[in-house]
Image (cartoon, rainbow, N blue to C red):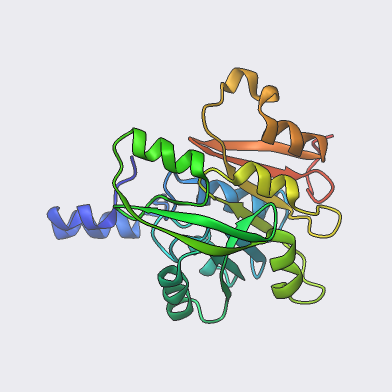
Length: 242
């Protein structure tokens, strides 16, 4: 578990300052520290330390559990996509320089039921994920029908002309596989992809459909942070992984 800076308020002032001034202290916003792993890969493997472009699919919050907030300190910009209007309003307030899109994301254009649970961390368009949350005791707050587009449609509409995608994060609470498999990698090819994968035996990763799909498309798994798996495009990496 990461130690939040607010926890240090209970310590003596000298201890707080020691932590802040320590050159070995690391800053992270994501749930499992995956943002620091992504940053390391972007700096060393892709060599994009400053001014890159990200696409956050299922952005959730501009700071809380964010995999892209750390990049903002390095002058990155990007596209934040979320189905929740309140979330996008917050992104518009805190990241007005970004392209913030309120829309559901699925493998086909249409409408899906959006399920929101108490606590705010789980919002899903997946009926299977919604039922799983109910089965484990989560309280369903609201379900409503919303517009859904494919990731390709959104990128065709919103991605600036000629803009490469240096980093894409996919966190769609149950629809991750179908969305990443629907992404047109011949047209939109992120240098680095992070995606949530659950219930995987780390000793049998090749059997997972997402890992297998990305491997088949010349992405190499470089890091795992609990449920977040981070891949690099072999054709864009500056290091030798062949």
